[in-house]
Image (cartoon, rainbow, N blue to C red; front, side, top):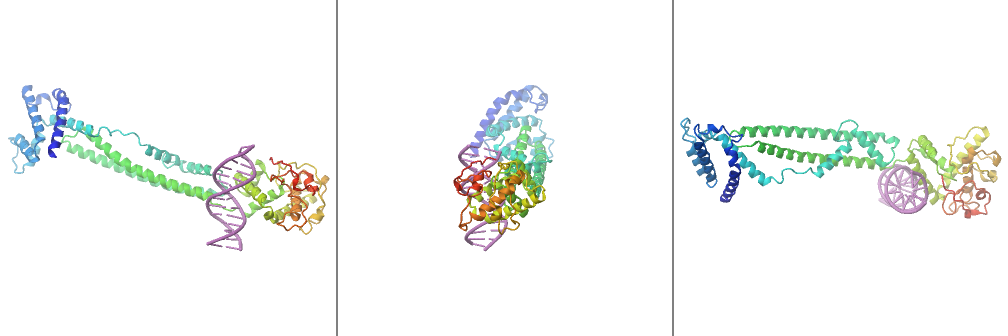
Length: 457
DNA sequence: AAGTATGATTCGAC
DNA sequence: GTCGAATCATACTT
């Protein structure tokens, strides 16, 4: 075992010697003054070097004790030695003071460099870790890494954008998210700083140690550099762990935040009422325009996309089960009808949203005698509408009235014995029928077969 | 706990 | 982009 190592080392040294012979002869920077070798001619110096190197090589084949003894025999018997009984110190001292020391150190340094490089040279400059890059990018994107300002809010905004449309009342969630992100960020930076500080301290410590040791053993600057590199790698792997766990924390926070957004919260009763009012008053064409949606959103304190969602859900659910919504429809239809009546009576503007998309609202139509249709409904006291008296503005109320009419007669869950009308605004194929078509209202006989597929908004 | 209501999301069609 | 339709996930009700 030892033998093998020794031979290996020797072979390395052998290689090194060949390569180094020039440097040694030409006065290596780490070498002492060439003329200081022997004070005399170069021949003696060369002889000296060769001697020493020869001995170094032979040492590799010897046991430690033998080697020590040999070194001792070479360097010990110096006249200026204090002659202490402990053999180690004098030997060390002798070594340190030897005039050949710089040269030897230099040679040994080069040998070490060569051997170390040949052993681990391949893995020295590793490419940037893709995982680390990913982590860095994510931390940067999340606003954890990088500049302090705007990081958290940017991430929160991004998260909000992912969910599509900011809810007006989740600003609290936003701030919560921001606060938590800031917390993560702070921990991350504190830890990072700690690690960096520790890394620097440790590096400095090691460098000092190596410098200190370089007086007693051959340590090349490259070796120190390499050691520093190793330390940095170790610390960067710790940093990577920190980054990874930070990323995980951010992901968890993010998913929780997004989940929280998905958490359904019912709209306020007022909001639902406003939406229902619009829906049932525009039952013929319940597709609010962008403007109408914005207005509704503002009124309800929700977003436009929520309004869209609501109408989408409402339409499909209403269509799927009209009977279920009958009561609700009646209530809202009656309500809007009442407001219409009062506004018509008092000549004031109806309070319903302006509905540019109300299909064909200006079209003339005739109504069956409402006094027959709204018996028993509060507020419907037999006011009669004539087509000539109805302004386009109250088309929505007309829709409501017609809805009440139809609902109160035809679309109970089997409750209406006398089916008189088709659904007010739905065509037989499931689309929303143009409500302006008088026939659907005035001609009960036409029934659901009447198809007017104006579903555009 | 089970059932229902409801807001949000997703997917394909247009 | 919007829409309908199906679906999810939660809130609410029974």
